[in-house]
Length: 331
Ligand SMILES: O=C(O)CCC(=O)C(=O)O
Image 1 (cartoon, rainbow, N blue to C red):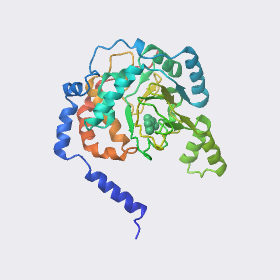
Image 2 (image 1 turned 60 degrees about the vertical axis):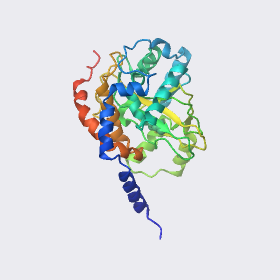
Image 3 (image 1 turned 30 degrees about the horizontal axis):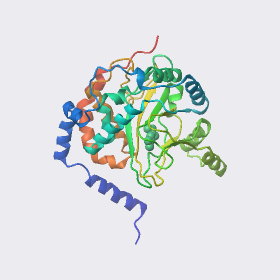
């Protein structure tokens, strides 16, 4: 007798539940998560609470690239900037993610380190973000790091949009720390017009006609991007991580989000932080990581293993989120 899809799903859930970290391991990890010195020892080439500065040489975007990609963003809802970040710096960030993973953490814990919060602060990146979101734009505290294993069939996140109602006040940025190729699961998306058509049909439960499906398939944009590039999309753009088609190379990347000043932010996005202010305090970083972890088990069910850990750190750090007020609207 064959198992039904429901039986298979329920067996999968049971297995996931059984793979949860044992309580004593969770207790130990919670202590470790708050131990800044331990993180520093884990990745001595990265920093926590360093003075900052030196962002100027970290990234470069030519005027020509910036103008072309701003135009693409306005017309198609996404941008693709080729080599933006200093290669040696990106290689160090990759090593940081590798060290975090090797120590048994979900890779998003790399956001305890300064470099992951500072990455978009260099003047030319800031200027591109400002052209997309307006003066005084802010970063929200939705952050994530992705690791797609170098094994055939392993895939990034399934198709979704990040913030349907975000309009021109919302922008996601996605930065590969290893080369993201068609073979190892680079990002894919549907540009603005067709993205909206499909999302609207989804929302209203309207079946898509074969004509729309065929047209959408032909409109899919593959976004291979070398380590150190920066790509991104507006909130209503349907996008997804591809499946590994036989490459042995893992795909590593990070994702951050930005908002126009004065735009209403969802609870999930809060608190917003000012990219011109000092980097967020350590506890707020843990809050942001575990806030995302609780949510993203829907894309990465294997994270359920860490859910009790995430819940407890999230609860312990929630006060930091209340302490950071949303910056006021631009005058
Ligand atoms: O890297 C991926 O597979 C998915 C990234 C993504 O969709 C996101 O960060 O919103």
